[in-house]
View 1 (cartoon, rainbow, N blue to C red):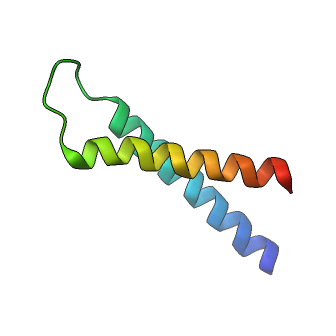
View 2 (view 1 turned 90 degrees about the vertical axis):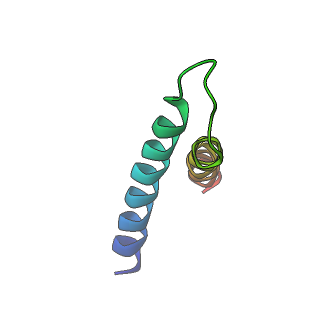
Length: 58
């Protein structure tokens, strides 16, 4: 049961991280970028990078 819950949590984290990264990266160049869009790029990369590190070290 624990493995199923961790699998579901990892899947949701990957989807959320990918969507946040895409939203943050879709800012138009030379345009005023809001704080939420800038943070979503960093947060999305952090989630995906953290999951990658956990996957490689496990």
